[in-house]
Length: 140
Image (cartoon, rainbow, N blue to C red; front, side, top):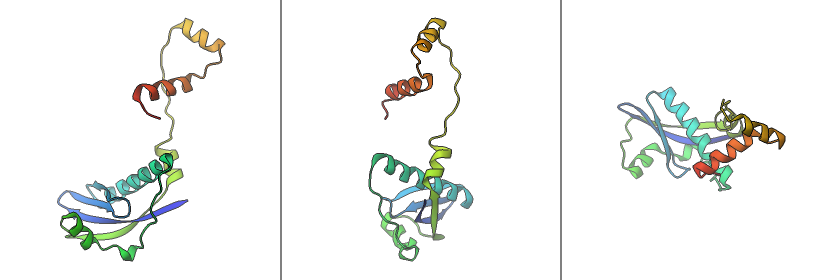
């Protein structure tokens, strides 16, 4: 499902700042307009994905015509200069599969006796490593 939110793009000396007023002033930036759009998509996907994983509600997006970048700039006390509003869209599920949930292969070495004991118990090595890393990193 496609999610779309308006974002304010503010031209700066070294690129563009991007702000999502509907999403608690979520922001990112890029050195070029193209890179700032890529970063906006990544930022939006990450925010929405995290909200989904944490069960947090997400506000409905404003209409593009309801967002005034000059007003946003004043509220944030930044220069409005060369600014515009654009819709940023992302399919969060597809983006997450490609960027957040993608598995990577790791090669590791364990003692032969430990390998034999684990195989006898039908241990899923990948799951054990994931569980151990999460515990060590104090996450999920």
